[in-house]
Each structure stands twice: as C-alpha cells, then as structure tokens.
Length: 220
Image 1 (cartoon, rainbow, N blue to C red):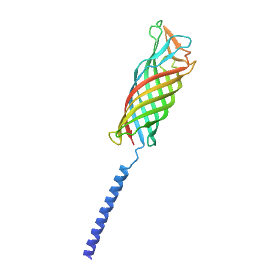
Image 2 (image 1 turned 90 degrees about the vertical axis):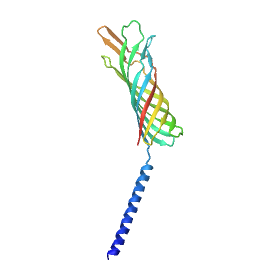
Image 3 (image 1 turned 180 degrees about the vertical axis):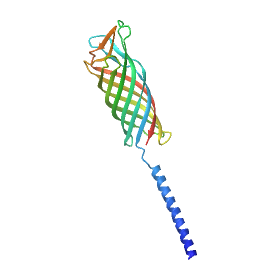
Image 4 (image 1 turned 120 degrees about the vertical axis):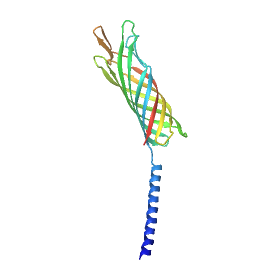
C-alpha cells in the first residue's frame, strides 16, 4: 500500500503544482488585460487675462494673471474619445480701470465645473488631443457685500498626454475659457469707509481667459 500511496501523493503534488501554475497564469493574464478606462488628473495652472466692460462707460474690470488648480476626470467612450469632467478654482484680483479711484482692487474667486469630452490621436506613449467642455462658472467677490453669481461657461483645450507607465501619466495643455456674463449683475463690489464702487450693470459679454497647465494622471 505504501508504494501506491506514494505514487498517489506524487500525483496529487503534481496536480496541485499544475493548478497553482494555472491559477497564477490566470491572475497574471487578468491583471495584464485589465481595462484601465478611467483617468483622474490633478493639475496646477497659470491663468491669464479676462475683462468685463461696464454698461454706458469706458471703464472695464480686468482680472489679474494668477495661479489656478483643479481636477479632471476622464472615462473611456470609444477607442479615441473620452468623457471629461473639468473642475478648477482660481483666486485673483479684479482691477477697475478708473483713474479717479485710489485702490480699485477686488478679491475674486472663480469656480468652474464643466462636462464634455476629449478626442485623442494615436501615439506610442505620447498622444495629442483636443478637449471641449460646457458648464458653469461661479464668481464670488470677497468684498464686504459678498456678492456672487453663476454664469454659463465653456472651454476648449489642446494638449498632449504622456504615458510612461500603464497607470501613471502626465498631461500638458493650453485651454481657453469663456464665461457669458449677464446684464444687471452685481459683482466686483468694493465697499469701505472711503469707497463704495460696484459694477451694478455690466454689459452682457464674454469674459475670456487663457490658461496653461501641467497635471499628473492616475489611470485605473
């Protein structure tokens, strides 16, 4: 009985080894073939320009160049296209071009949330792309009155995606922003003991800005 049992044990050991090898192969194949369809990009940017004209006046509010930051979420749609959700925040100062006002600066925050997509060209580790999004921009004044409002906005970007590894990448982009400002909106107010200025009526026009950014992309 012992020789037979020994042979049976050897067969069992070989079977276990084969099963373990097959399981390892399946796990390896599954990990290799896992679809990394989702991307999350954390970016830092520098945003330029932007001005709004006052109604019935030659004066304009000009936004100062300043840093911004945000997140971009992408999900694969087709081979060369992705859904995109874009969020950013910018803190800047808006200056009124009126020489009669001694210190016409107002602290302003802009929060942008937009939905759209990207189209990517083929590439080996480097993929050029274009992006377009639509949504809203919330503009908040840090003046004493605390005025704020939300406006329809859109953006269009051109850039490249770098993929040194399957799960980690980098994103470089230049993006143009446009915010549709309504008439009769109370924004950019500056109040104080010696100053009480508010753009109570602004022209319905586009508040345009331009930004360049670099981001780190995580794929999962």
